[in-house]
View 1 (cartoon, rainbow, N blue to C red):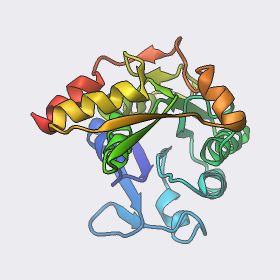
View 2: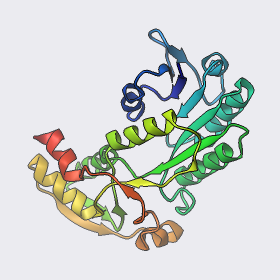
View 3: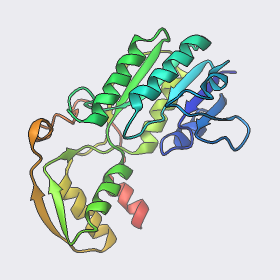
View 4: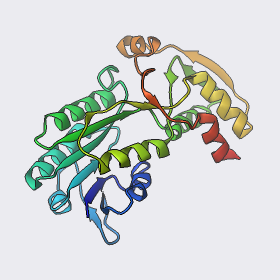
Length: 244
C-alpha cells in the first residue's frame, strides 16, 4: 500500500485532498498532532519533519501561507531527499513567475527548489480559490464604499483542485503539469456585485488603480492563464452554496 504524507492536511485544500486519496495509507502533517497518522511539525524550522517523512512513498506539499513558502519547501525537499521519497507533489499558483509580489515570488522560488530536487516531482499551478475571492470581497464590503482594484480573476473550486492533486499523487512524477483555473474570468467589480446580491447588501463602489510593476502585470491580465485546464464550478455556484 502506498504511503502518502500530506503537509497542510488539515487546511482548506488538504482536508479535501486526504479523502480523495482512496485506499492509500495517508499521513497528515500539521502544526499539532491530534490522532493516529497525524504528525506535528514546524515547517519553518523543520522540527518534527523527519519522522513524518520517513517511510513515505509520496509527499504532497500543500502547506503554505503569505510568508515563508520558500523556507518551508526547502525543509520539505531536504527531508524528502534524505528519506528517499519517490514522488513529491507541490501546489503553486498561476503566474508565480510573472506577478512581482512577495507571495508569488516565494511560490516561484519554492517551485524551483522542487524542480531541482533529487526527488522526482510534479508541480501544479492553480488559480485562486473561490473562497479566497469571497474573503477578499467580504473584507472590502465592510467599508461603506468598496474599493475595486482593476484586477481580473479566474477563480477555481478547491474541490476540483483537490481532485487533480489526488490523481497526480496516485500517479507517477510528471514535472510541471498544465495549470488549473476556473471556467470564467471575472473582474473584481463583478465579484463584488455578485457577493452583494447574494448577501442582500448594498454598497457604493470606487475604482482603484494599482500602481507600479504589479499594476502593469494585472492590467495586462498577466496573472491569468487563459490556456489552462478549467474546472466546471463557477463563482456563482460557490455563492449559491454559501448563501442559498
